Structure formats: structure tokens, C-alpha cells
Image (cartoon, rainbow, N blue to C red; front, side):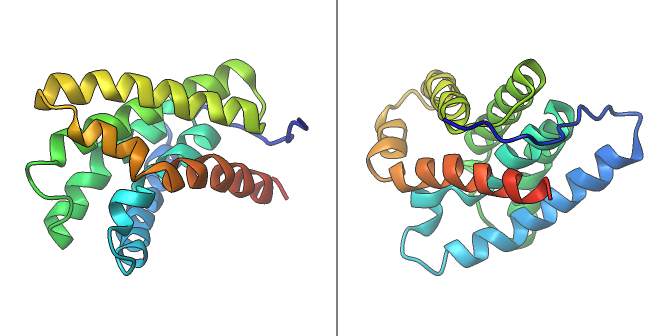
Length: 169
């Protein structure tokens, strides 16, 4: 599989760019879910917040991704009412795990390719399953991530690869 040469960054909290990009990701995470919610169960199927966090953390580092991951669900909830308050802690945990795994993988491997992105998504999902089980005590939502949400997993992998490939130009 061909690796894509992309300039990856590891922005720090003392850089204005970190906050600028995190704010851009939060705004994207306000708009993108509205589009996907036009599809019945679109939010559950595609998890649009995750696409932005995955691409952002991979491109700009885990610190920028984590900041956006922690802010996006809360800002979304305050402005749109979604995700519901009961889901907010789980959603925040999932996005934070995704930002950390994606950012650390990018920092470690310094490249983007489909097998690596598949690995990032699968490792993230495994950690998220344990976290969700610990937070909710139930496995139903975790199973739904795979049974209903598999198109979203594909979107995350291929969408992120295309976004990062496009950004490099």
C-alpha cells in the first residue's frame, strides 16, 4: 500500500496555531453532524465528529486533537442539544481516545497510509469498547458501533486518508 507523504505537525499548547486549529475543528464538528443528521440515524452510523478529530489529530498532533475532542461534544450539546447529556461523557471519552491514538501514531510513524489508519481506528475502537463498558456498564451501544456504525468506520479510514492526501497539496 502506497504511503502518502504529508507534512505532519505536533503543535503544543503554547502555540496560537493549536487553539486556532482546535477552534476550526470544533466549528467543523458543529456543521458536519447537521449534514449527517439529515440521514436517518446518520449520527450513529457515520459518527461525523470522529472524522474531524481523526484527521485533525493525525495532521496537527494529539494536543490539538485532544483539545478539539474535549470541546466539540460540549459545544455541540450547548448549541444544538446533541449529543444528549447522557451520551456526553461517553462521546467525549471516545473522541479523546481517538485524538490520542491518532496523534501518537502520526508522531511515531510520520506517514499516512491505509493500513496504518485502519490500525488506528481498530486500536481506538478496542480502547473505546473498554471505556464505554466501564462508563455505562452495558455492551449494547458498543456492539452498535460495529453493527450499525461500520460505514462510519470506513468513512473515518478512507475519509481521513483522502483529507490528508488532499491537504498535502
